[in-house]
Image 1 (cartoon, rainbow, N blue to C red):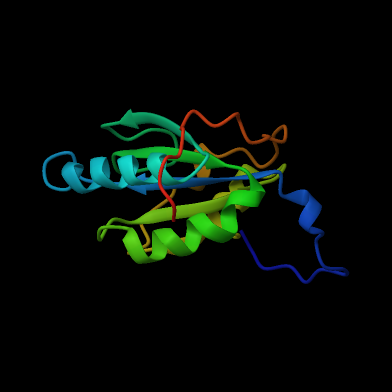
Image 2 (image 1 turned 120 degrees about the vertical axis):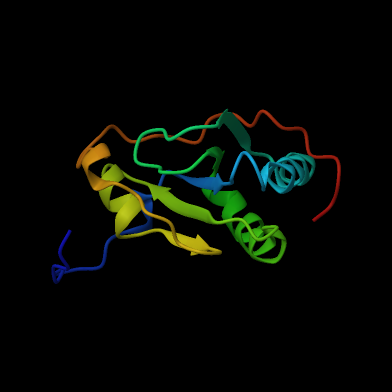
Amino acid sequence: MTDVQQAEPRPLAEITSFHAHVYYDPQSTRPQAERLRSWIGERFPVTLGRWHEVKVGPHDQAMYQVAFAKEVFAELVPWLMLNHEGLSILIHPNTSSPRRDHLVDPIWIGKPLPVHADQLPEQAEIELAPAPNTHPSRRV
């Protein structure tokens, strides 16, 4: 993707929700990923996705996804910055452009990893935050 000068700033309303992709190595860092996943579920109203032990979609490494509403971002993302257990985490908005979301507009916690553009559509239907499948019991 190339940088293109915009005539106007994009509105925040473009963002409907967020994803965090937590990457790990099944052989060496799965315990840290499990602990982090447990901590997230205990503290935040999010949707914890399935474990992917092998490459899936644009992701080159094992990972799981955490889907969350815009309202959760302000507490979850700084908390992840302090508690990522040395893991790489890709956090991206969900708009109508998955390719741009993953490659141009994300933030990384930890070491950035490759994300493959050819596996991401340029345009897609907007994804709203799913209902949380966690039941937070601890305070941040």
